[in-house]
Length: 484
Image (cartoon, rainbow, N blue to C red):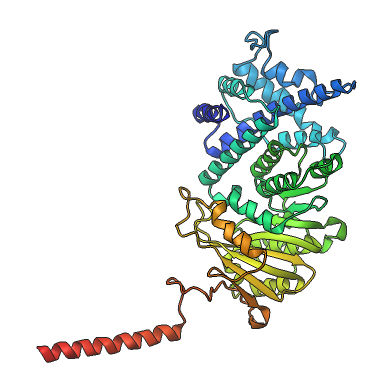
């Protein structure tokens, strides 16, 4: 039912003059979905309080509760069409009363880690783009049919929401900006293996896929005590996101996965001066996929000791700095980072190798990110000890990856198994840092166990082949002339 409901909502929004793309569909579905979720959450909390003889005070004033403005009902539970606003009345109420009221929570909330603050922040960042109040009424009617009361319902809803983000990523300018393949995220989380009690951070949170998967991983890692559940809810996951839409989607995604008040801040992570990061600001685990190919202005670059316009390389400096000693990281980056010869790349590789143990490099094939032909690697490192050996694994799924043929967890199973022991295979090998050039710190992926036809050959080998072919051609011409 949920899946069909989402399709029907998209069909309505497609007809609305205010919504022009998949990005708008997700954004507009998100704020209405959030208010329905909030209504179900408040009902659950009121029921729980009643069972223990306590009184629950609603977060939302009665006038602005879903059951009053969005979906008033008769005593038999059927919609009260006489009380339900529609058309211009509904649009005016949402734009001029509901939104200003919900924005106000940002100023009145006790602290930033409360659901009240998140309500205020979400509605400060968003606006209602649905121009027709009649279309808005149809969407509300559909969303009212969705329920968030049971674990199974929330689980199904989170999966469907992930699918919408995936579609939005494919429709957007850069698929990787909104959607990192979930099999890859799950694998990175498995290898980094966070523990309950550790703080987990993503400074380029996007749709919060890493934080959601880390939450799932820890939730299923053992039978949780009440205290551990509270630690997971409030003191484990932290994120920052620069773009408004990704920020909203990230919060919504975490809420649907079960984190009630996500600690995600809407800010430009790179605007923070690295020199200002203190021990209290650091995290135990970093999981991230910073934006590919972004360029930062000169004033932002001043926040970093290694100056570069390349966004991902600034993020990598930030992640190294913000990790605690002994902290672990799994970070996706363009594979050219390993071999670029510019001064910034060389300096950053040197910094990484000297301040961290870069123990694993996972080399991913092109097509891993649907819609983005960029080749990437995953860097796994621990802060505090220098690198001595690097274990490489070259993923070779035996097929071309893309939108219709995406990466799956089975593709990565061998990597996960071999990585535990840093074992050598046809696809994996170890490089001793003593054998790495100390002037360039070139960490290129060169599999010594497999002769790849597409591997670029050395110039001297090409010249030898040219000479050999010339000799063969001369002999052939000679033999032909003798026959003639």
